[in-house]
Image 1 (cartoon, helix red, strand yellow):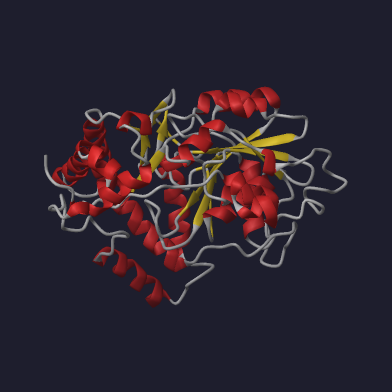
Image 2 (cartoon, one colour):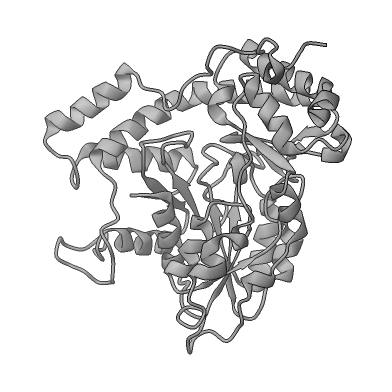
Length: 412
């Protein structure tokens, strides 16, 4: 049994994993084209090309490109008619933007627990959270794993709710062989620095709903309408547009994505194989109907009991020492300070004439997300899957090594 690097043994891996984001001459060429064009914002060709190509990528009729994934969520909710007095069901295992977008439009986020194996929102928990005030569900394809969209779509239709997909981590993920994004009423993507297609910042909304698209386009473009003139402002909108520079980088990202995705898929399958041989570790499960994970993250579920009581923090300390960067992820979102102390529950949207419910995030305790966030899972970043098979084998070897030395980790 090889000695752990944590205790002076040789590391499994010395060389770094592939860096992210990818920088190449193709990206520089597209940026230079924008510089030389002299059109860096409205009226440039890159933005028009990107929204067309990204809609095609998502198998959607329409795309609105904007300045962030958070903004895309807010635009989607506003365009769907969600506002004061409404409740929006969200999972607690997600980035804060999923819930804060609801508050931005004057609605109330209501948290529904996740499935402990898929880490996506549990449709039964979502159904139990529905009240007469519920107006929408946000389905978060966490880590790139599609939610159980058949169950959620049926739930939304039966209760007359809007279904918004949070696809911030799910570029190219598939449910039932179809790309996520336009499966619900609208899908929202992020192009922030970490994302599988990135421009540093940026976002997009896709939809097959013509009317919702028109409202979203108007909201993001200072209230103009697609068929109107430059100074024809028909609704209250904001300047939430994306730049030509971002779209140039994103177009290159779309070109690079097929090869990168193929690498992630191959290496993720290989890593899943390694985990099958290690008691106490298992990969995120696929919900019914999910056919492709985008693997923005590779979550590993951790069963402390099966590792003789070894705490996750100690396991990760040893794994990182072996040259494998891994870390724990979110807290339950309702336990973030903003939901405990930072929100004025006496003011809008929580206490106003439009809202008749009562919010008490302090008493909320959803068992599945609590267990996952308290040592039940850890993450690997998607760039670790962009190497060759031997890189993935290093990850598996390091996990095996830590598992085999668990007794020493427990007593030292």
